[in-house]
Image (cartoon, rainbow, N blue to C red; front, side, top):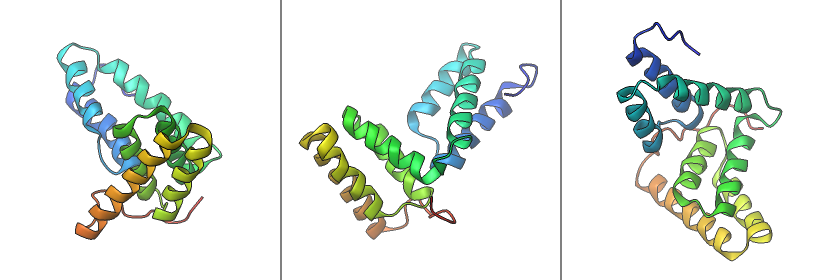
Length: 146
């Protein structure tokens, strides 16, 4: 976490950069939280969240690719469409492929039922169509798979 004495703009940009490194982009919800935090002097809360997220994601035996696939599956089970899409893109950014995403969607059928499976397949189809239309922003596969 950066020093609270630093100006807020570079501190907020450091938080954004952590999301870019993991997901390839900064989710709209994170931007909204940062705007609110900056407007109300609560940037330190967003920095703490980003720090904890960084520790959990980087100091973990699963690695980035598997972490993003797990997030995708968990969010499918919870029925959280928008965050599931973010983490499906994050999985691609971390080196996963469409077959990995389909595998997660299929597994969600067993653990969370047809609604989770349908959401997963819908998400994969959206990503496939987006890839056909042009490269996904921030979805270039990372080196190596885990």
